[in-house]
Amino acid sequence: MECCGCRIGINKEYNFYKVGDDFYCENCVEEDYITYYSVCGEHYEEDEVEAYNGVSDLIKRINMNIEYRKRRIEYCQKQEKNEFNKSEILYNQDKIKELEKELEELKDWESD
Ligand SMILES: [Zn+2]
Image (cartoon, rainbow, N blue to C red; front, side, top):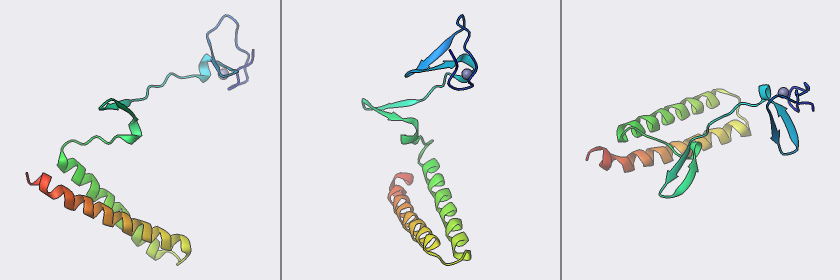
């Protein structure tokens, strides 16, 4: 049997993997671990959950996000004026407004 990845024959005495109808040799398969979060009994994948080390960490990251978007806008303003750059500027301006609103809402918590 030929490996679907490297196309080398799989020795019949060796370990192999089967994915659907496809066979793979040991060299082509790596075991990987994914972190899942269980939030009040619901399962979420790693990219759906953000972990923060206190409210100051969240505020710091929001400010970094705002700075990044401001630089993005500056960059787009220096580029030629086309539809893509215009919509990129508007998109980032909207995001900055959202982030600033989020910062505003965190003020009470921060000063607790
Ligand atoms: Zn292989």
